[in-house]
Length: 145
Image (cartoon, rainbow, N blue to C red; front, side, top):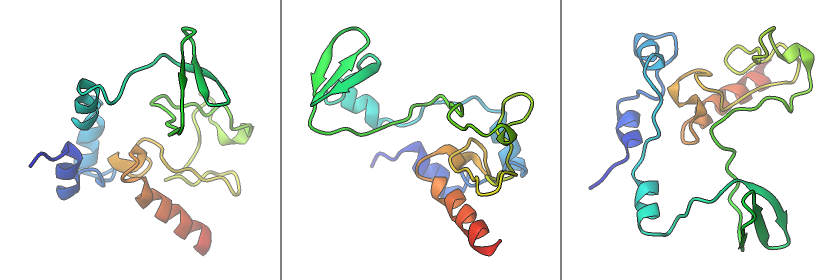
C-alpha cells in the first residue's frame, strides 16, 4: 500500500515537533519540498491540468491571464504558497521589517490571532492537516484569557 510521506511524519510525530525542541530546530534548517504523489498521478492521468493565473470570473467562466478561459461548475479556493499579510491594515500588528508580531499565534493587538503560520508552534502549523492543533490552542487561549 502506498502511503504519503505525511502519514510517516504523523506516526513519528515529526510535524508536531516544537520549533524550540531538537527535532524542530533540525527541521527548520532543512529545505522545503513539495510532498505527495497524488497530484503528480492525477496530472499524469490528465485529471488535473495546470492553468495560467486566474484574473477574473464571469458567470460560470474563469478567465486566465493568457486570454484563455474555462467553463466551471465548482470552485475549490486555494490560497497558494506565498504569504501576503498586506490586507491586515493594523500598523501595530507588524514589526519594523514588516513581519507580523505574534507569540504562538497570539498578537499583541487585542482580538487579533493567527493560525496557519509557518512554524507557529511546529512544522505542521502551516499544513492543512495539522493547522487544527494551533487552532485549538488559539480557541483555548481566547476562552481562558
